[in-house]
Image (cartoon, helix red, strand yellow):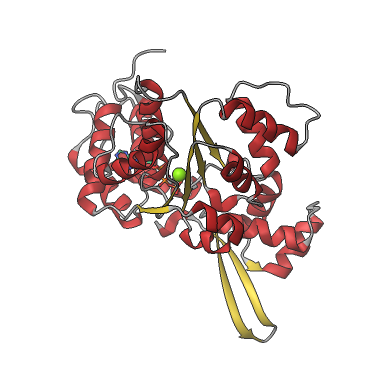
Length: 348
Ligand SMILES: Nc1ncnc2c1ncn2[C@@H]1O[C@H](COP(=O)(O)OP(=O)(O)OP(=O)(O)O)[C@@H](O)[C@H]1O
Ligand SMILES: [Mg+2]
């Protein structure tokens, strides 16, 4: 491939790409590290619940702390297992234990039940200390794994990350009374902070001089409106690709506008991460808005096999992920109904 005239490092616009530091999140970075610190001194760690709106650096901050721990272990600290699970994909105790076994290098997971798996995990982890990070924790279907970890792992820090701090109120009391997490809140970035973050990502990503100031301003402004940095990263990349397509030397406002026009294709979270059932429902809602009950019938017609309860659950998941919007209409002619609508991102 010929070298790009626009991109120096396109990967820097990937949402998974981890910058070396996270400006404006120093306080939270420090708070997360402070929860782990006792663990590194041979004591039990502290637990915390990290919350805030989508796309404001929660995952990035946690991953950065874990990466530092992995790359620069404290020589005097006990050996520490570092475990990170995204509960959007691994949403049951069984799936989480399988994932933890894999991360701990244990491969013989076939034909083992949840309890067997946990024994293996405890056996490995109790020889050292462990940091457990459970991202998108509100997506889990059960919290048994937390109970097991809390009661049977000796030296640990548990980090729980969520968009919905109210999720914690729904957790079983036997877990809550033990976990007692500290709260670490991620507040929204200001317009200037968003611009600062995008500017530095753009500097990593584009050749110097490739991005026109006016282009940057359009993108930064749109991102600030929404507050989700993923949107800005998406727009920067799309504008860059539009410039490349035209073999242009600079990314102009016209390219930014082209990127904006593509917004309907953009999802806050990658759709690939959704379960097949959730995808099916999303496809349905994309083609039409409507009442939950009516859409459920159509979902069955096109081969959906879940019960109404499962359907509702998936709808909640899609709503939480920002894919669709739901609105409860109370006291209409059919009593209370829930309306579903695709979040086409022209609302951005
Ligand atoms: N302060 C920052 N400096 C540089 N990049 C940042 C900063 N904050 C967030 N980002 C980038 O913005 C993107 C979104 O952040 P992140 O994935 O951490 O969001 P999140 O808060 O976990 O959102 P969600 O709740 O939807 O999972 C990532 O690519 C991340 O690297
Ligand atoms: Mg995240």
